[in-house]
Length: 415
Image (cartoon, rainbow, N blue to C red; front, side, top):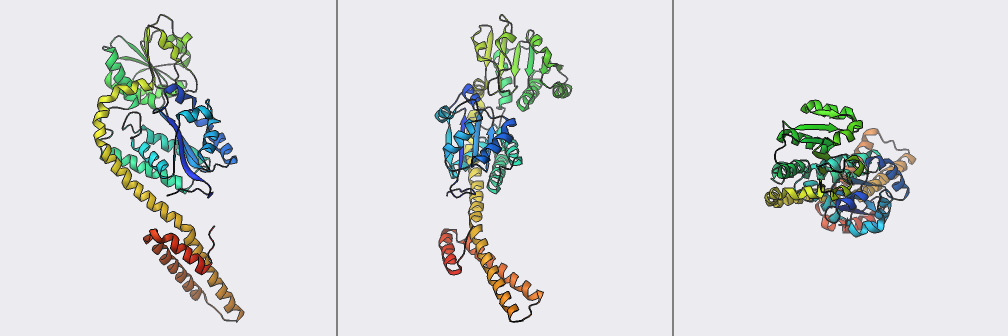
């Protein structure tokens, strides 16, 4: 099945970069930021791309949309990243048509997550899709596609054990601390950045270490204070960051900025510290790992901490695939029906023309037609149209032949 856009020369694609082929540093070069959505959409439309959306997370950045070819998307996308198109092609995944659709369904179900069964991705898909929708980059196909992905995610999460156990990115930071730090009674933990991952990490820290000294710092202090009140933990102003680092034993960075928020000069050279960088692109300068006194781990390293849970989740993969298959069939049925609409509409338009022509001739002959008779002919036209539509839907395998025959018989013109 070929998935066409508004322009008959366009096909549906997904191009992207993920943890499977690129490390965190490389992925960081191709991160797409929310504040670029408006400008990117306007520029893309001026360059012939109309219906699309981007999803950018710590583990993957992907562009879903219609284009004449994959190069059109790659060149347009890379204009808005720190990387270049040539290097991007060395790491990218590209899929077209049904393969692109199936890829989104697998991503939304947690099957393609770096941590198998991590469902944080579906929330990101919804958020990113709505950002582009507000800018006028959506259409009926993309709406239905994303809604189907959401349904798949919910069903997999509720009806299988694919997400069983604690193996989210946010939990993996706590898992790492448990495995490497031992007793935390006299340790100071600083959580820097309270976006979604930061908030989830905070909740897990408080749950597993309720009596530990945890401090929050966020660029917007008011947001940190709300979280601090919720969990009864200390909040410091962003201006106190460097001073607080002098007293920190475990630093968790979840700032999600486009550049480094923790640099060499911010941490005293002889300071012993464990640093967990949960941001992509990396927000902790990686040269700190060269210090003997510092233990630095990023999101790729954290993912290796949850292998036991992942092994258990793999048993649920067949059930998840069955759910994807079920919803995919429904989606393709809708898609095939949608592709018949132009022919059905053209047929109805031709019948309307016959009605109008006949009424005009009657008027010329001074024959009066009352409203009820006109209404009757309109109902007959609708009934005939419905019969035609039902036949096409019930006989999809022969739909093309039927449409060609009707086009010859009634001289139909499709838009």
